[in-house]
Amino acid sequence: MKFIVSSSYLLKQLQVLGSVINSSNTLPILDNFLFELDNNQLHVSASDLETTMSSTLEIDSTSQGSVAVPAKLLLEILKTFPEQPLTFTVEDNNTIEISSNSGKYALAYAPGDEFPKAVVLDEPSSTLVPAEVLATAISKTIFAAGNDDLRPVMSGVFFQFSTEGLIFVATDAHKLVKYARADVKASQAADFIMPKKPLNILKGILATSDAEVKIEYNDSNATFTFDNYTLTCRLIDGKYPNYEAVIPKENPNKLLMDRSQFLSSVRRVAIFANKTTHQIRLKIAGAELNISAEDIDYSNKAEERLTCDYQGDDMQIGFNSRFLTEMLTNLQSDEIQLEMSLPNRAGILTPVDGLDEGETVTMLVMPVMLNN
Image (cartoon, rainbow, N blue to C red):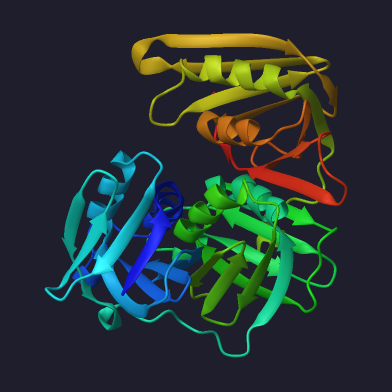
């Protein structure tokens, strides 16, 4: 088995696939890339058992076969080469030899059939989503997903597809983000919970792609196919909480603010907040917003006044500054609206401008109890 491939082309593909491999694997074979050669096509895969990703490369060869090559070693050597053709030859003594313009390098390989086979979905449902839409949906929601191992369903992003549109939701019980698209529709209703790791991998590659992503899914797995990549992952098992029930419907108090101005103030004032609660206080009266924080243990305090457009009763409400900062950073609009009902009910943050047609973003942040 022998093939010739461009060093930079191979490195680019392997770096993407390498993000699937865990730093410590229970099965040693998972520290390898699987190379499957079929004449002038090389199929490369990486897996951590939960997520498997593969890519198809165009190469120069007339042979067939499969080998598992050590991922870390191969990536390290490829990073050092300037752009040039590399010849890979599988030798009889269980090594694979790489020939470059300047030398030869031999790596031990494992038989390809020891590598775990990727899951093939039986009769999956499928939906086509533009790469840009999926990348935006992931980056808008993933930061709000939880990290609690005791509540695995909240550690992923909930995909809800219907004939009316697509909805993506993430929550950790303190904050919630719902991203909806009415301009992209599915042929039938379905929902599933995607884990964070494959979503982070997808987010990285989709940002530069303008392809359509084919999402196929059943009860236990989902496959994303686009360009020359295929990513298959196991879904999080369980029922997602009823997120609609926690979004307050009646919010008479509405605050309109310049997003970047609000964000800078929150960031500054938060420096003086208590380091365990990160609590900041918003006091709104008339056209004035007063943002303050205090750390009684160290006698630190800060207060800022901003002008705003506010309709509603005068109120004081406390928020965790870290959640507020994350949400304001994630929004791209110039102006934001914060809707509130009572100091103990969640506040709803929405962008006023900068959205595509059919795109809506709703962010919900739970208040913290103020100690007067």
